[in-house]
Every structure is written in C-alpha cells, then in structure tokens.
Length: 289
Length: 274
Image (cartoon, rainbow over all chains, first blue to last red; front, side, top):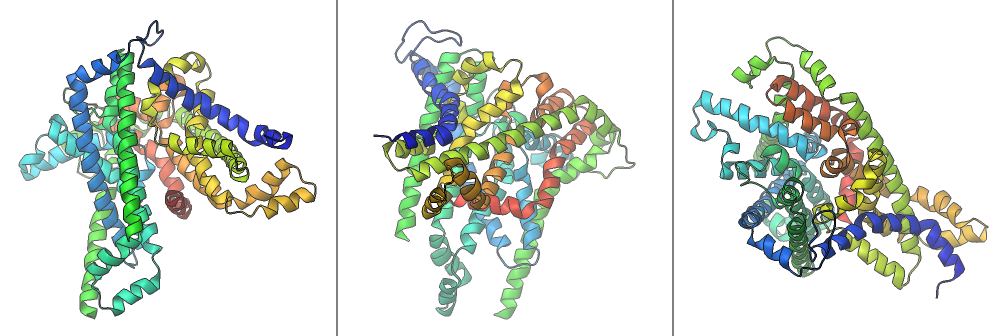
C-alpha cells in the first residue's frame, strides 16, 4: 500500500515529531483515562475498580463547589472579556491618530504571564485599593476584595479581562478591517446609522472572529490556573479554587491521585463538550449571515 | 452631521485614553513602588517616591537569582521554539503533501488534541516522567514543549503549505533535488509568514508558562515566572523588593515588544484567523 519512497519520506519528515507527540501527550492522556478505573495511588495500580474514582469525585462536596465556581467564572469571563475586547477593537479601528498607541497599551498585559499579573494585582487589591478606600472613604474598597469569596471572584474577573481582552481585541480588529469598503459604502448610501451598520453589516460579516474569540475565552476560562494561584491562592478557605487548581491540589497536595485524575477527566469532558457546542452554534451563525 | 461626527470622535478618543490609562496603571504602580523604601509603601502605596533608591533592585536581583532565571528562560524559549519550528513545519509538509487515510487521521488527531487541557493529563504525566526528569530538567522541559506545542504549530503550517502548488516540488525533483533539499531550500523559505506566527505564539506561551515548569524544574533551574512567584511568596511583605522583582520580570518582554510590535500583532492576528 505504501511505496518505499513514501515510507522514507515518513521517516524523514514525520516520524520523530509524531513519536514525541505520542510519548508526551497521547500516552499520558490514555494512561490517565485507564488509571481512573483502577485503584492507582500515584505509584502502582493493582486492580480495576470500575467507576469508584468517579463516584468518590462526585461525592466530594468541594468538587461540586469548585465546579459551580468554575462555571460562574467561565460564563462571566466569557461575556466580559468579549464585550470589552470588542469595545476596544471599535476604539482602535475608529481612525484616531492615537489608535496605534491605544492598541499598544491594551495589548501589553497579554505579554506577561498570569502568575506575574496575579501578584501585581494582589498588591493592588490588598494595598493600593484599600488605601484609596480609606483615604477617600469609599466603603466597598476599605477591606481587601480578596478576603471574601465574592470579592475574590470579581477580582479574578477583572484581572482576566485586563489580561486577555487585548488578545481578543486583535482578533476582532482583524475581523473588522477585513470587511470590504464597498459594503460599508453601500450601507452608508442607504442611510444606515453607525450603530445599525455595526449591528446589521459589520458584526455578521465578521462572525468568524466571534467564533474564534469565544472559543479561546471558553477554553482559557476552563483552564485558568496561573492567575488563580497567584491572585487568590484559592482562598479564603479554598472557596475560590477553579477546577485546574482544585485538581492540582487534590493530586499533588493531598495525594488523591485516583479521584484527582477522575476529576481531570471530568474537566476534559466539560471542556470538549462546551467547545464543540460553542463552535457548532457559532458556525451555524456564520453560515446564516 | 459633521459636528456630531467630530463629537463622536472626541468621545471615542476620551474613552480610549481613559482605558489606556487604566490598562497601564498597574504597571505604573509597580514602577513607582519599586524605588520606594518599604515603610513609604505601607503608609501610602499611591504616593510618588520621595527619594529614589535602587536598593530594592539590588536585593531582588540577588534573591530571585535573576540572571540565572533569565538565562534559563531564554535557553528554554529559544531552543523549544526553534525545535518546534523545525518539527512542525516538516510534519505539516509531510501531512499536506501526502493524501491518504493515515495522514488524514493523523491530522485529525492533532487537531482534536488541541482541546485537551494540560491539566487533564498532568497527573499521569508526572508519574510517568518524574523519574526521567531528574538531573536534566531543562532538556526535558524543552522536550515536553515539543509534544504540547506540535499540534497547533503543525496546524498553522499545514494551512499554508496546502496552498503552495505541488508543481514547485515536482520541478525541483526533476532537477534532481532530494526531498530534504526540496523542503529546506524551496518550501521552508516560502513559509516565512507562518514561521513568524508560530515563533511569536509559541515564544509568548513558553516564556510565560508556569504550571509545567513548576512541575518539572528544580530550585536551581527555575525560569523567570517560577522564580518571580517563589520570590514574591517569600518576600511578599518586603513590598519594595517584590515590586522591583516584578519589574525585572516583566522588563525583557516589554522591551522586546516595543521593538517588534508590528510582528507581535500581525503574528497573533494571522495565527488566530486560521
């Protein structure tokens, strides 16, 4: 079926990268899947235990509260990041002389890793904002937001928006400038207002940008770890652990490898289903324009 | 009409200016506080420094092993990204030029693997590799990045290579060029725009990555995000030093961005649209 030259080409170009891919990603992934059905303790597995690990995972009330917290975080960050990013994209494409400068500023937080951003904002929430609150007598700033669960939730959202809106802005800008001028010209001649042009012409024509930006924010929301660890460390009292951090703690801090991995598989299924549904819905919107 | 448009522009400009300020404010706070002594920061983190002192920087440089961490980060990023460029462009070339069940399935698996979060396999990953990591963490880390980065990079290259006519390969083959020569001398130079995208996207990811280095690296082989995090955890009450440390940590990438801004932006926008 395969000629010798093809096999030679395979070894020349594809064998090594594919082997690494298999070893580093595919093997641990399938191993992890298998291990959730055994009594694996991090070192050895002696027998198959069916769904016990999954049952234990779902019996853990902490896991439920983490799932709820993560769900809230994913939905709220998805909406806020994209609304802000789209707004920034509109500002940056508004033919202002300062547009490039603005774009530079909006994008900067994106260059920096979540951990460093997280600790910068920890300082802001714990010190800077508290000082402002006390000096100016603003009640909701006098105590650090990070001391309460709901305050820490919004702190996470603010940092996430600040961090990733610049990236999503670039995606929206790419969509906005790819719209052909004659379409906009036609809308203008027909007397469409700026808002109507945006809503009925521009947004449908850049539907692909929405598909991508929504997909990325959805994925980032589920996978968020760095900012979580650096900003709230899961506190107060492990109430602000997102799912990534929860799994990390479960396995590496408490040694629950079996249930931890079961939770990780649940996380994977959630991400996969959410991403597939979102992409399917967005694609349908793209076609309908 | 003209008046309202002018007004609208002023409004948009004001909004943009205010938001820009909000976006850089946190960095501004870090800079201001990095040259203040600790006591001044505690009394008022918002005040301008009374007198400048570089002492915080000296302390931070030492305590976070700055130059070692910077070198480690640099080595990891440069090696991992270069290897990724080589591996993924070759794999993409193979997959794009051979159409059969095997290449189609492989490509599908690569694309599907992109929605697997690292957290979904990190536990078995550590139990498999923990033993191999000892003693050569940095090399292993670079190796791991190949596995985790290959899918997206191959995907980006694949789209581009599919649009290069195969006549080019055939003509070169008739002239007697070997497969390797065809790829490296004819195809690869044409891939420059994607190579730029692949380089920037991967470099940003690897430079800033935290979770994988945290699992793999030991104390003396830390990368910058890791050493910053540990330094901050240890000296969080020494605000001045912590701020100096943060500034040192973000400095290199921001300087690079200022010089290569256009490449960064175009790299990301063309990478995202695929």
